[in-house]
Image 1: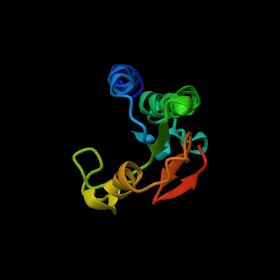
Image 2 (image 1 turned 135 degrees about the vertical axis):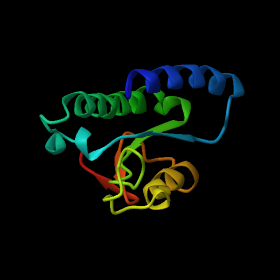
Image 3 (image 1 turned 180 degrees about the vertical axis):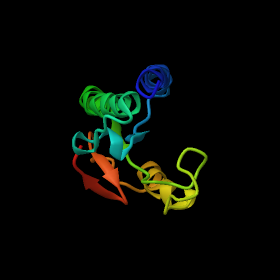
Length: 125
């Protein structure tokens, strides 16, 4: 779901974006997780980890495929956030978790593509 739904959305949105013919570079981001990082894989959560790892790979490939169309594609990790999924022990508020996503969508350099972000900084996949 993490990967296939994002790919379907990007494919559908890509058609609309091509028709709109934006002159400005657009910034698309995928919400990943530390569990999708090479060093974050856990046998305790295999399906979730592999789906986020695949999403990270798709982010890299899409960034290469869409660069010529002025669409930047990045992945971001919100960290461990107090949500229904993250639970009450999580150290971050939803606003803190959303900060990098909002920044990527509104302020980040459109020349940055194919990268993985946390706290507005590039990190390793």
